[in-house]
Image (cartoon, rainbow, N blue to C red; front, side, top):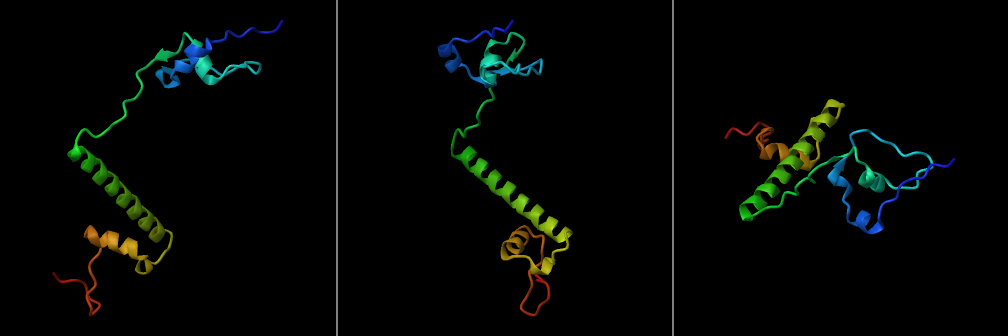
Length: 122
């Protein structure tokens, strides 16, 4: 005897946001189940209803600038980690590309080299 799968109302399913329910049973579809993951979640009585995560949006110019500065800093940290990883893998730190050197100098992590080849004495 074939399994009869309950189907959701298409209009109600179209309005449903799957992110608003979290599965508590780790359910998987039956091999003959024609329903989508969203439809199964919509119909499930064991799933927990949750609030969708709030999207952080800047409220003013200060917050906008703060988010931008944070993104720039995270990018620079990632670049520094890539440089350190390359050096750790045997790359010659004296042959770093210009962006690596500039990044480290901007943050005081590498001494300026004077015209005489010595370190910056300032």
